[in-house]
Structures are given as C-alpha cells and as structure tokens.
Figure 1: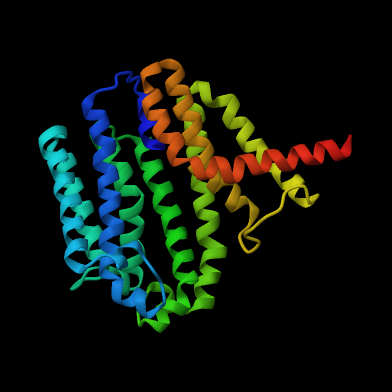
Figure 2 (figure 1 turned 180 degrees about the vertical axis):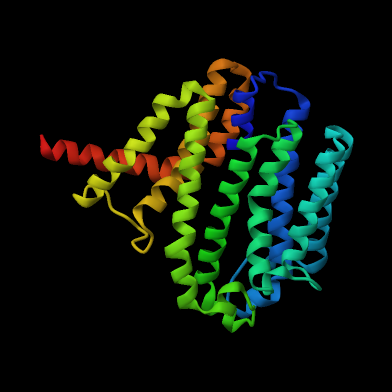
Amino acid sequence: MVALFYLLLTKGIFSLSLELLTLIGAISLYLSYAFLINDYCDMESDKLAGKRRVLHELKKWQSLTLIVIVMSSSFTISIMIIRQPLFTALYSLSFLLATFYSSPPVRFKCRGELGVICDALVEKPLPALLVFTFFNHFQLDTLLYMAMLFALQIKIITHHYIDDYEADLKSHVKTFVVKIGLNKAKDLLNSYLRPLAITTIIIFCLNVFIQIPETRIPITGILIGYSFIRELTKRGVLSREEEDMPLYVVYFYLVLHGLLPLLLAFLATLIYVPYIILMSFTFVSEYYFITTHVISVMQSIGKWYVKTR
C-alpha cells in the first residue's frame, strides 16, 4: 500500500476507479498464489520438519483446485479489466518466479544464492513494480523503492532461512544458509544485510519527505523518534521481545510496514475523501501493527509518565 498511496499523492491522482480497485485485487491474488504454491510444494518437507500449514488440512485435489482458481482469477482481472500488455507480461513473470521458487524441476529455493534472489524479487519488488507499471511511472524514485524492497527482502529471507536452519537440515532442503553455514549467514545478516536494508529505508523516507511536502513534519518526527524510543528502551520503559535484533532494525522496519502506509493513507484521504475505502484496507492490513506495537508503546509511556510525576 505504500507504493500505491505514494504514487496517488505524488502524481495527484484523486479518482476511485474500478481499475484502481482491481489493481489491489490482482496483487492480493498474486500474493495469495505465491504463498499457496509455496506451501503446496513444501508440503512433504514441512511435514518432515514438523511444520503445520492450513493447506495440509486439505486433500491434494482441493489444494490444487484452490491454486487454479486463484491463478485463473488473477489473470482474468489482469487481461480483461486492467488490460495493460506490460502489466500482464510482468504479472506473468511474477507468477512464473513464484511458482518455480519452490516447484520442481527448478526449485530455486534449493539453489543457494538463486533462491535468495528469487524470493527477494517475488515477495516485494515485483508486486510493487506492478503498481508503478500500472501508473506508467518509471523514474528515479521507482529505482529507489525497488532497491529498498530488494535489500529488505534479502534481509528477511536470510533471517527466515537462519530460523529454519535446523528444520531445513532435517528435511534435506538445501537453502542458502544450509549451503554457506549458520555462522557465516549470521555474520552476513548482522554485518551487511541489516545495515543495508535500513539505510535504503531511510533514503526512501527522505525521498518521500522531498516529494510529498505534507509528510515533512511527520517524517521528521519519525526520524527523530528513534532517539526517543532508544532512550526509553535504555531506561527500561519499553521492553523488547526480540533481543537478538538491533533496535534500529526493529524501529525502521516498523516505520516502513506500519507508520508510513498509515501516514500516506491518512494524507490521501484528507485530500480525497473517497480514498477512505483504501484507507480502510490499510487499517485492516496494519491491524496487528496498531494493536501490538503502537498501543503497547503508548501504554508503556503512559505508565512511565504516571510513575515519574
């Protein structure tokens, strides 16, 4: 939703068209397909590793039927409603990579670095690029956004492979981390991937600061807010669940996936009230962030304030 609201605001598009709603539907269906096909192809290895997925509760023919319905619905929307050749070509490429990430005979997931690159494209940059393609927007900010998402997803999938290292060994899944070893993967994550991902997030936030004047005060507050959160964490006012992850990583990850989409959605709705429909989608998608992080932080600060008075 960040890419969508960013483009609506920077391009001054204030019209709630059928094509815009179907764009959201098409990308949602693609992401659903990506998770479904991955869970289906990993069914045997997941069972060996003791993992349970919703798809495991269905019969094989039911799982395949669901996957086919999602894929056919996706392309019906793309071809019949959106009707942009470049969009459909990129959409097809996205489905192809999502399929062969975990599906034989290619199964990029078990091909070391290729698995990391494939996942990094499938989960974030390609869906976002579909939004930029829909609006025919290919400029420097497009490159900045794609680079940020690519770096971020490489960090995320490497972390995921590290968490799944023992399970992947048990189920004989030769991921990137299994290939290079757990210690090397942790060093790579901490020394390079995390700092790179957060640097690209900050650069993109500065780009939003420049491109959308209405965001300058909130983004300044967000950037300064890290020092405030760090100080409160040092004083024990705020507690952390993931002690192994640096605070700056947690903070700016939540900025990108929580604060920024909510901010852009709110600004777009202030300018064009019918966008409240899109803002509602954003609030639903960010429900976990709001209830788990924002409310928790506000409650902790409130308790600390009462104690210090």
